[in-house]
Length: 292
Image (cartoon, rainbow, N blue to C red):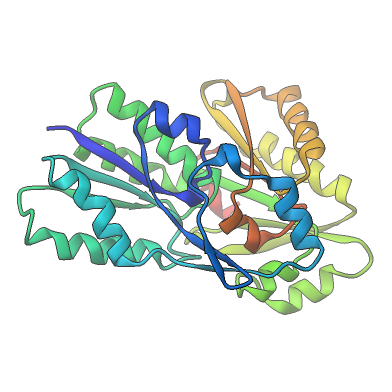
């Protein structure tokens, strides 16, 4: 029996990839001056303008995906006799995973013969997107939904997400990071090093002096922790710092070149939380790499 792969817009994958591989998306919403917006097509998102507007003081708020949206998204395929494999943004930073579980429970009575699987990646942006790409590859090779679920769950503690931001006020304002950390790192050109922990929460694990050193530190973490780089796609997301993203990609190719590097603009929902000037790196490492 066939199954449909669904993710949310936080996965940050190019629309061309999603269309080519038949992946549907449940949309997060963001609000600018009280106007609700969604970014369902990455090709029309002007990242430079969006992050320039944030620098100029534009206030952006977001909302999680509610169960009703998930029910609508899932039922389109359940009614066609397909099972659902949903790949979610981290439950450590959003309630949307729990909303997907609520929707699945509500639909079980109507579709008792169908299977709805929700995977909490404990990741965001292209960290989540890497799980989508793995799921697609497995499906296309004929893997069943049950085996795909087992494989994806086994990889959750292997994903490493490391990033630096230009200003911690955005994470602080949205409650993603303690404000005291934001205050300390705002002084003396100190830049934070952040990662996703074992539960998919954002934690600060170090500080360095200056932006250049911060970007170099991302590459150093990659060199230290990556496993089998030649067999994996490594991902970079940035919030209007394209030149530094390109520099980071070159650093990755020096010592442990990956099979491929995917670079994207941060989509507006996750991007509004981390703020302009953020640059993030996502790759797979060894067992329990998140703790390192």
